[in-house]
Length: 124
Image (cartoon, rainbow, N blue to C red; front, side):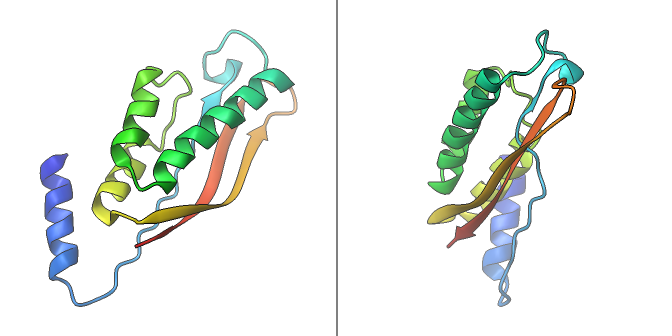
């Protein structure tokens, strides 16, 4: 991973062109559909919102290590599928800051699943 990020940074630095990073990734995948025992309720969705905000804060601070540690400390209990691509993007981009533009949760009508997601603009 370190070699890949180093090669990507080297390529970016050697280019005279502007680079735009786009990562289309989800955050949490929770609920029975993803292996959790309980149906989702307002309390669990609020808990997930709080956790996602903490995770997104690490990204907005431009801190890939904090991003990774947040998920690893929980042993990826929320099944964050965007962990690796977002970590790689943060390492390669090294943003000064990020700004959450939109956050939401897609909850199944039967409360069996939720996928959370956000749009974030990063500035270098």
